[in-house]
Length: 138
Image 1 (tube, one colour):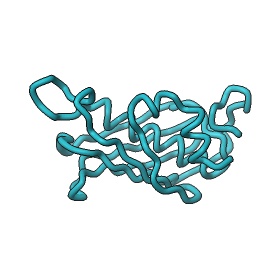
Image 2 (tube, rainbow, N blue to C red):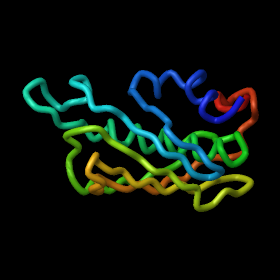
Image 3 (spheres, rainbow, N blue to C red):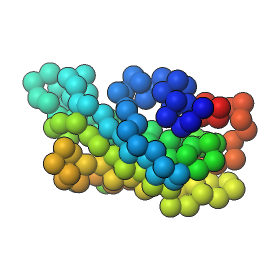
């Protein structure tokens, strides 16, 4: 079972949020969220809540780690820098910049449909989680 299948079958939060993985290579993942009304800050505007962009970045980070060894663990720390509000679909590119025996580091760039930067993240994730505790292990 590959990363894409594991993600779609064993990650209900990603499905709930609307995360779609569109490309996977070892240590690199692309994906998106199609902005819908329930992602908005209010019912009078189409402006994504910041948690939507963060959820995409964190989810893509886990998938990118899974593409290296298939064993990402929980998020330990993430810094997110927002550059502009998302008013349409959100696209993300996640790259593993370090994968160690205890932790991994992933950087994500979030973009809008015009390739304008919406934000960036850098996260640290646990990597030595036992298989029974990990939904990404197939």
